[in-house]
Image 1: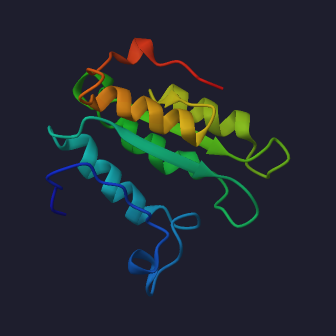
Image 2: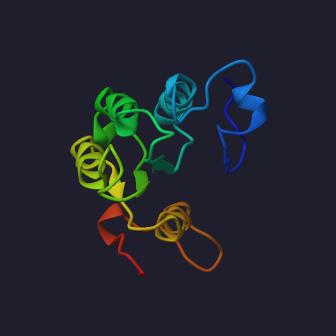
Length: 140
């Protein structure tokens, strides 16, 4: 896996990644491999993960991601921002999925918008310098 030179957004559910294999909502193998690479890349400023729940998702979508996070001490990896899309009525339950990610050291954003804004703040821009993860707060 080659590291990008700039910011990278991957939709691992895209046809390019799902040809002849299950969607990552069902089989997290490809997603875990990309996460593993990003966590070990010294140029990674932040990682943003979505965890989608529901009947089309695996039984514990956060598990494979949390396992990768557990392999790398938080002090040795970039900040990981995660948000869970679903409800407590989903078979996986949002509270259980959020808890698993938090235990693995992910910073939980309430929405995808918050996660994206936090990532921008962490990577810095011309108008804003980078911030520490202690300063991540929800706008919603």
